[in-house]
Length: 393
Image 1: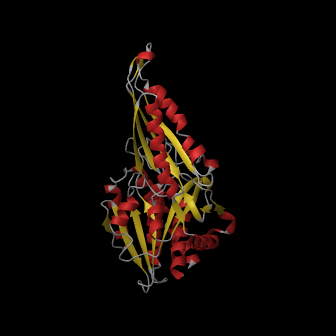
Image 2: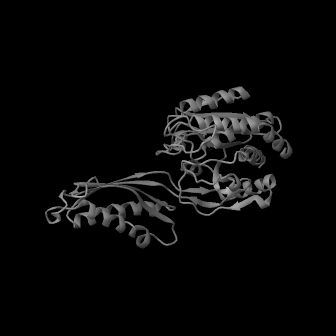
Image 3: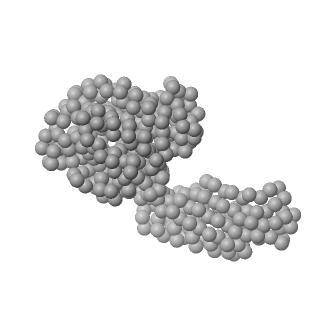
């Protein structure tokens, strides 16, 4: 089976690259992936599968092997793009101004389409069912994974395990990264409004300066991480947007701030929300202003099932060689794959896409992000192998 999958991965390589380039050229934002979903569904039909829509722009299909009721394993790819203007000069550059596949979801989708090609041809060689999940809206709260679960993606048939693959530009192409247990952070959004009394900048004694108060707040909020968080629990609080629309001689009436809080413990997460609210409102109040704060709760933290991940690591070693396996560090980015992993054992691993010789080094969520497309052959073959190996368990 190993040799068959490797051969088929090579045979569909050009087709998979074509899928990725088409998707890259026509990206769509979260929960608006209508053309993307149609493209996926049409390709699955061409393969001989019966795709089903789910959660408006999601697509699900089954590959049934011999004795299909024996066991079901789910494979997930996300399909949405980001609101970023692409800066790459490539033939498959985004044709949609201000929208770009800057997180590799085009690669994830193309790779899973490659898996569909491979496993459909091998369906008489394995027992059980592979459920293909093409999921919308990974980049935007509440997360397409949550909506897909609500719509019943983990039922009829119910998968026993789920596997997700994500590109990683820090890893050279050919390398595969795994981490058992706690891996990625929960993600919450902070929206803060500091209200004072604006006026002429030359008369600060007659004003309640919201810029001054907000500046103090940016610094003081770091206490949540540096002095309130248990040292054993990873935590990050960052303010990424600060809007004070005054002028050289004008103090505005209010300042708007936006940021993120991330951690890897649900109890501390809830406590931190309370501490953030208390600190912000009391600090600004003590300086004569008013603070309005909204915390939008995002994805939970992601934990890779230790037993499943150990099996996947061992299977990947057979496929790519022990020398190409990498132990991943904790990563404070978020992923809505965490919702699946809360429901059933999950393994979320990393596919290396970096090629320094070709200048493919940019990180995700940047205008110059790209991948070494040879990673797609590895990606679709490896994911096929992992699914088949898990069905054998």
